[in-house]
Image (tube, rainbow over all chains, first blue to last red; front, side, top):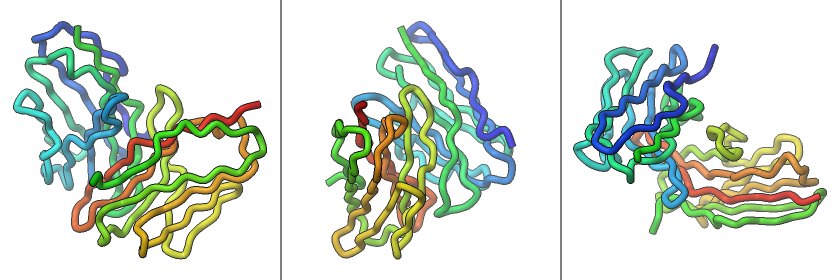
Length: 113
Length: 110
């Protein structure tokens, strides 16, 4: 298996623009997580899905952030409009079932200028 | 109190030294525990799971103390390649959530 695949690897955008991050989880994994990592706050869980259904989005910072999982093999995290404080590394991770380890993608490094 | 707390370090140790990190968690009902390793500008990767009876993998030993609600990671005979950030992870009981500590930085010096 290729592991969790994220795209793009790097994104530089201007403030106010829409940003869409993409994730393909490991085949057969039924839990998917979106995390954001900054130096100041570490790894923060934004939202997670189980069997394509959003279970907990309490970590989503505000209404500018939205996430979807239309099927078992694809998820998106969208920021609209983006702001400089959204600059961070965004990781997607998947897990085969509850309680087992999560596998991370390589992350998307987002810079909003 | 944070759900998962770690000393950020850095821990600077010479090659060959033994070093230990602790991590405390707040929810006594937590059931799953892990140590992840993250290299600079890379994604976190699973180092080892932490079992109730403790477990060992080569130079690495993980232990769980439920009474005091902490887990530990011991690294023996440190190598330069062990330099990284070590993240403590706790599963939030009754959910599918994994809560990460902010990590402990380790630098092994030649």
